Length: 146
Image (cartoon, rainbow, N blue to C red; front, side):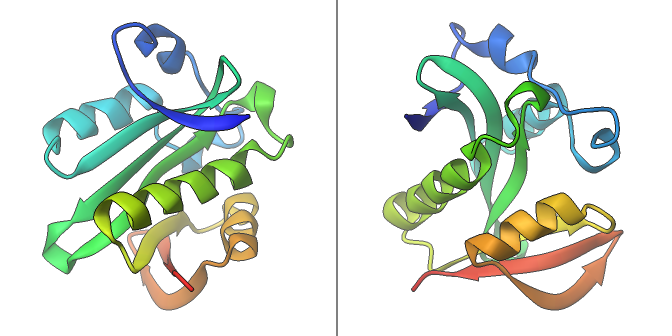
């Protein structure tokens, strides 16, 4: 059973050990960097560990981008040892449910690094669509709730 859990003192060390493969590293922030951003933007950042049962398998950080009045899928990674098991798609669903249910978001924006075709395919298959905006090496995608 995949579920999201807040980052706590009890799971922090395990979450910090999550990482992607070397070929994915140019596209994904480390969990440590993401948590530093979460602290700096603590009023509008929503970080979670992704668990499969009692095992941490990934990290997701959602946020509210005040300048554009948008909810965002800000950071997302599935640990290299747990990829290809469906956890990414399940976690995207849970993240969307959180933003829709807790914050009444009607749409979610994310950016995918140019060249990160694996992530782009996942997002598009989930229902994100290209907005046409490319900035700072990132392509913007948008998910609209049905």
